[in-house]
Length: 153
Image (cartoon, rainbow, N blue to C red; front, side, top):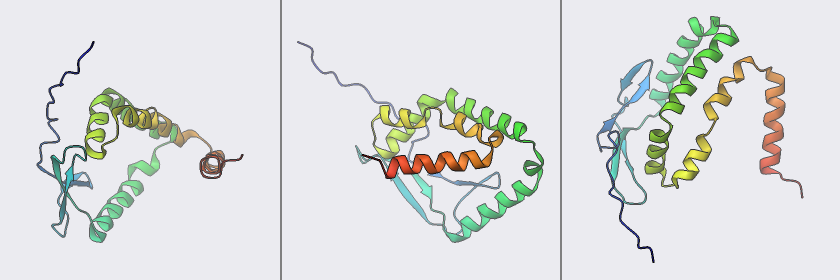
């Protein structure tokens, strides 16, 4: 008869309980208000990180930075160029997939199989968006919404 064995758990380097800032306009910044919250592993109660808690002023800073980025070089990129950048991001996510899934599982408490399944292909799918016609994407989104929330018998 097989017996269960305890698996030694190692602490992830990023989940060390330290303070994590927000990335706004290419810089890691604390919340303007100075507020923060604790992110805890729901299974163990262990402190994973203390995180900057953004509010309206932080949202305004992020929106201003996003507008500046959009009105800068990004808006002049051709759809294919945008797609290439997003595919690079998808490659980075895929390369670090196990680590990102582990962090997600620690943070939200879901089984690793669930966090892996939800993340699978997400970035690569999004990378195709810049070259797809908007009309067909909107149609597909409506169909998906209806199928998900209003299933037919």
